[in-house]
Amino acid sequence: MNTTAPAASLYEVFATVPDPRSRFGRSYTLASLLTLAAVAMLCGCRSLYAIAQWGRDYNHLAPLLGFTRPAKDGDGYRTPCISELHTVFAALDVATFEAALTRWIVARGVADLDQRVVALDGKTLRGSQGHQLPGVHLLAAYCRDVEAVLAQLAVPGKTNEHKTALELLQLIPLKGTLITGDAAFTQRDLCAAVVQGQGDYFLTVKDNQPTLEADIRAAFGPAFSPSGGQATSRRGRPGPKPR
View 1 (cartoon, rainbow, N blue to C red):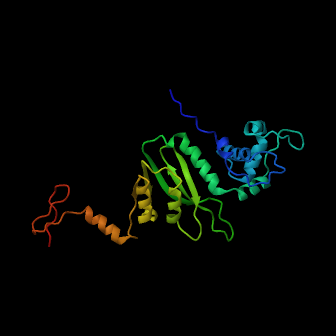
View 2 (view 1 turned 120 degrees about the horizontal axis):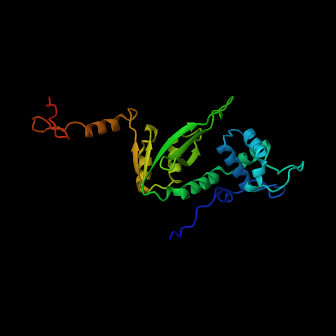
View 3 (view 1 turned 30 degrees about the horizontal axis):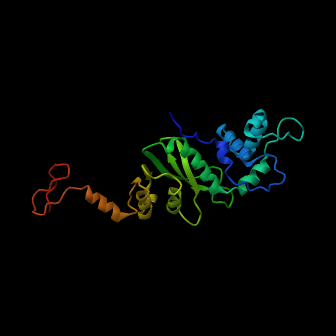
């Protein structure tokens, strides 16, 4: 008989995120607002306007998400407008919010896997770049086994993906995890952090690290015969004679 407690719902996880709003004049909980935004995005909404409109179009679902206060016109329930969404998202503690999402995803099967593959990948968010703005660049840890992003962090303009990846590794389970990534993550400290967490790594090496690349090529090249005879490759085939 399985006695393991069921994983918390997304609403319950959002309830652990601190509410940045004043406790006076709240029409609904932060958990309700965040759950509505998540459901709206799952339905295809990609802007604050679309999320707010979804709340009006599917207002009959509002009580299921925790909205119980009647709208000002008495028709339906009050859900967040664009300005409310903007104000809350701007003040939200991003690190705490991401950590809550990570706990929810990990509890839904990631931690039960003996082995998992997690890819590190950075992308600039589409539509986030505007006039005199560099755009929002995020680094994500994607687990293909559960087809979900375990955690993601914004990459500050004054640093790079490598430094942000070190912070990201602290948010995900490393034991039994194979970390993959491109050449930007092939760094000593990052590899050491993965091994220290009892994980493994499979990273790309390019010519931006010529010494490391040469060492790898030498390790997999034909064996050298000190006697001057014909060398034998590591696969048992005769190698080229030394000159």
